[in-house]
Length: 399
Image 1 (cartoon, rainbow, N blue to C red):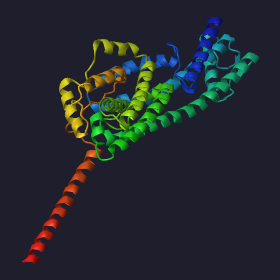
Image 2 (image 1 turned 180 degrees about the horizontal axis):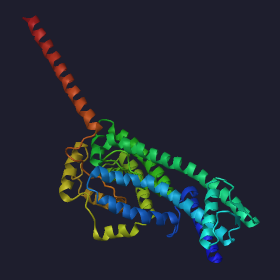
Image 3 (image 1 turned 45 degrees about the vertical axis):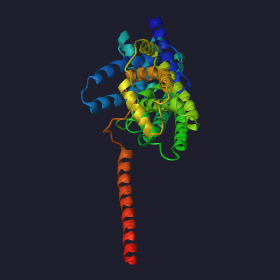
Image 4 (image 1 turned 90 degrees about the vertical axis):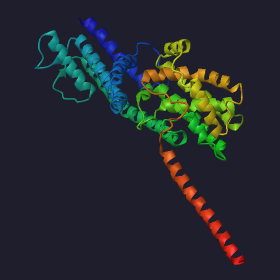
């Protein structure tokens, strides 16, 4: 009995400590199929997503998905604490419960309750002192657990701000894309809104920013995959839809437009695709990606929509259908990232953006554009009226 408790206690303690180290401290993607954190998210996310998917109300469904990320963090911390308390309690039980406890029962279950009580008060540094250890081994084990408890609390205090700092930096760029590419973002809208004079230079700056954003996303979300479950604060926005829209825009620029924007689009495309592929590896989605490639999935750009895409590109001064090789290049580029994007979207229950915006979609940019167009037409009418009045006065002077 004591040997079994000793082995189980060591496994619990070492498993919790190693898993917390890999999840919080290790700055690279941890390996291993039987890690506690990985098993925890497999066991909890799949049923949670299945239940949330059955909710018909869209707002309630999104609320259920949004709750999972922060909630899973709290439950993961509780799981680590439970494993540590149970592990040290079993180690104390293996030592024969060397405590002076007036409330302890003589049975094995009663002694185990005492060991778990001492372990819990020690890990959370309560220090009640109502149960006194009577051996050097027990005292040494209690000191080790006290230090582990202090380190565990310190890690939790430092871990949460790091997560929310990375989440905040991610969401700032996602929110900024709303005015540049629509809500939800689309590649056509992004290029159309940069078709003004000097828009190519502005587009290059934007792609540089998103190249850096993709690199930061890769570093933070590979180290802390829990951030992938954190949803955006606003409707029609998500980090995956923003990343996919940027990849769509880069694919269009690489296929169509030579020049500085096309060159920067290649750099941004490579970095964004790297982030997308690596995140697919984190969630073990290689088989889903392979099935998507072999069987095919939802075509985000069917032939009828492709003709609409050609017409929309003309508004952005880009000719897609005039070059016979452009559609083939675009299809080849789409095959490099769409399977990974679709697999992540299916797993995380997120929606990928369309290539062409909805005809009646509204966002802040369109509201401002409508006001600006109205002001411009009024100003133009005022200028025309002034010119007509000047002509009339000139005629009156001649007569």
